[in-house]
Image (cartoon, rainbow, N blue to C red; front, side, top):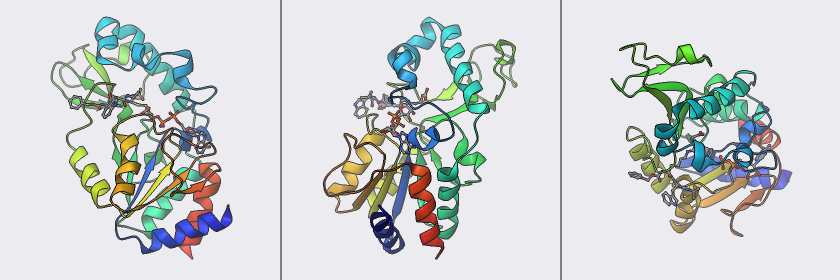
Length: 244
Ligand code: BV8
């Protein structure tokens, strides 16, 4: 394991266009259930029932109940060593691009200042009347009111299945991935697109891919550097090596 993490630190220090992408696995050690693991969120609920525009149009109360349930879990969780290690890696390597699929705000809480939240943020609310976005850490029904136009027609500002990714950041993400000569995937099952396609794209353009995940996932290939341990352990060791 150590020799693989050392290899990743060497590749990372020589990479001209490194990218790190995180998934729900990096927050597992903070106590946030992943989507597809043994106690995964989707296991008890179907994503297609809850994380889609159709579900929200059909039953907004039920969808809000699920998001408030998840917000409550997340509000009681803190960033873990993996999040802090990524914040430090970004400090050591300013040109490092960080993308997260997570909506749990833990990278921000760990002091990471510049990164792409490709699936949005569970603590943001978007008004369907005036389109304004506000921060809402409340989980009561009464808080579901637009702070600007006072409409009650508000939704979680996250990307649901069949919805396009945020137009404001997607071009930057696609440019970073298309230039990437090193792609470190952390804590993702590689089952949701377009994020799941990034590792494949970097391989196809001759870049090196590394995967941190205790389980081998669909997205991994024999050419990858596979670090089969938890993100907290792997990333802390990597950050120490990069700090020198
Ligand atoms: C779109 C926000 C088009 C909401 C989420 C091909 C190309 C493009 C699209 C598609 C395609 N094929 C299919 C599609 C459609 C669809 C899709 O991908 N479907 C899947 C199910 C096949 N994609 C979409 O709909 C996307 N939109 O493509 O739009 C378009 C374009 C123009 C105009 C109109 C439309 C939108 C997808 C976004 C969906 N939103 N989240 C919310 O959170 O409520 S996805 C959801 O899954 C989360 O964001 C989550 O992050 C994400 C991915 O899951 P993972 O992060 O990987 O988590 P998971 O639990 O699966 O895995 C955790 C891993 O961690 C495991 O492997 C485990 O082993 C590991 N782990 C556990 N503990 C640890 C650990 N690792 C390290 N350390 C540990 N301690």
